[in-house]
Image (cartoon, rainbow, N blue to C red; front, side, top):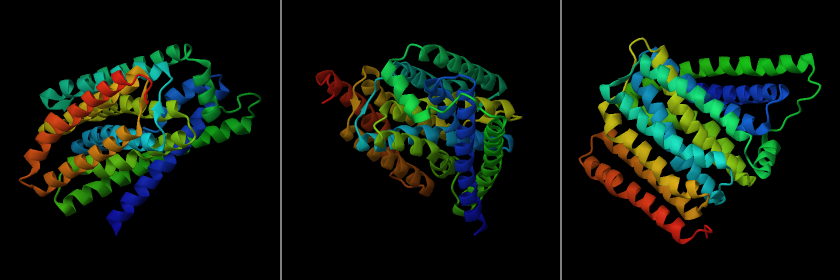
Length: 358
């Protein structure tokens, strides 16, 4: 009962903290003259990744390294396969925003950078500093490039994130600051309880902390992205639905892993299990969604269905790994050598033959 309470209350605090942080920070950003487009691309996309940041930083600092890495890798896989898949089932995702198409190669590049830095078995403080410097450069890039976006994209973000900036009263400033401070406090407390509960689950079930991080914690900390992208899809704001996922994936690797490496006294260990299978899957699913998004075509419903099916296959891998099943090598080989590469090729061929996305 205590373990379940820690997991549930910890997750709820993370969700409430992320919502409070995003609400206060976006209003403060708008009040100082930052455009809704930049607010959406930075404050909101990064704010929805605040639970991952809080959980991974806490796990790294307390020595639960597999949770720190598993949370990031699992969240990135969940974001693309589950959230983009679900969003595409709601409505085909036609991308008009130039920035998203620029961000796809960046997401793939930083996904490949992660195992390169972790080949020595850990993300040390130098690696963490490099990753964190890259997120600062990426944020500056976003702000500069946002000025070149089309009027329709700016209007889409203004409808979703536009808040009044004029005549902000002192009381309003205090309220917004309280949202930010309260959000941070809830994230800190929620991450502590969620990690503690997850470690207890791993011990009770006899599974590794990496598996818990890849599943339970990854899905729990990605709930803000689920809410943002699904609601945006229902409203027809497809740039926001896709941009939130891509921006969050970049933030997870650069900021979350980077900060975790900086705060961890001994660095963040990267297990051979993650390097062998989970991180390659993260890279492959990033590559699988690239053809449609890079060409600006629609991510069709059938592709969304396929992404969701692949996520179920990935969960099957984790279940087999936890149980020590003899069928695990066969499933791993099928996923890594056939299913995901074939999907990337099929998507590329489809969009070349159907440039109108139909």
